Length: 330
Ligand SMILES: [Zn+2]
Image (tube, rainbow, N blue to C red; front, side, top):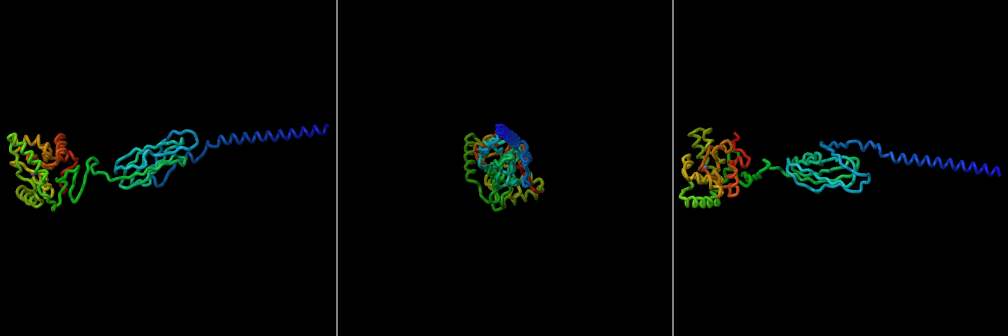
């Protein structure tokens, strides 16, 4: 009986010791599991890519640990112009905490600076956003188109001709080819006839004294003026060949073609009515520094009723209206 009790006691001690060890082991495992994510050196490092010059981060709010939701852009692809910026919108449904890391597959086409995507040159590339410390990322296709030269107006160059907002331009900066020989525009002539008829109904007589001029006509006229007055003075009132508004076929000189016209009732009427027929005073008073020419109340230019009305109401010269200059390069 004594022996049996001793064995029983020894057995109990053994079982007790094993249980205590097991409990201690379980506590150690539990505590170590809980503390494991506290320090992960990788999650604290800033991701840098050699190919990416602008890696920016924006802290994002996040929830718990499971990354089941997705990260995506509100747009799949965008088209921007060179110099234009677009603020990317990212939806984060992952609940992940971490910074946004922005990367462009080609920084010479478009950059992504804190989610602001800016076109750098024509082409296409991918903008990728990644939540740091995770594999959650989203991709946006970016197409970059060439920007307009002045940013506001549509400039089209075609066969040596320059159209700005659809208006053919001939001035000291923009020239026409020597072989551009359209003759007088039928549309402009019809508009003039209507205008002259309405003026006549008010007892006024307006007529075209000089209309279309070819490159070679202008060359002869300009060279005569240079011979008389010298080039510097001739350039203030006569165009070099290829630079004349008259070569467009859309310009007319009215009546006396000199300063005396400015003192006639016809001049007063044209000044306030021409836009209703699609014409503007091409070289207005006080605008020499923009147009490159002295005031010519008699020189009207057809640009269509809508545009002429806009220019008239703006009080600007055509150069100011279109944001262009008029200066010879030499
Ligand atoms: Zn003229």
